[in-house]
Image (cartoon, rainbow, N blue to C red; front, side, top):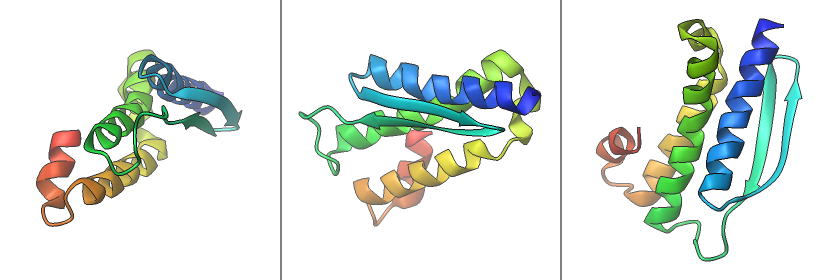
Length: 108
């Protein structure tokens, strides 16, 4: 139950911040200790645009932030945040494939 609660806050964090950044939140689903929030990028942002990548990095980070705010440091044992960090790394490669490490640190 504790992991389900953490997953709910995690996915809600993605959804709320996505909504605040004008993404169209399509769905939020919790299945046991994991979940998924699905949003559509605003039409004025292009997937490879730096602003879109930065906004999406903020959305990816919001899940773990919400989880820690509401569930405490114990939430760090869940693996959901690692998937989000991989997505942020992918965004860093889109922004600057020649300097992924420094872009990654900036997005965090």
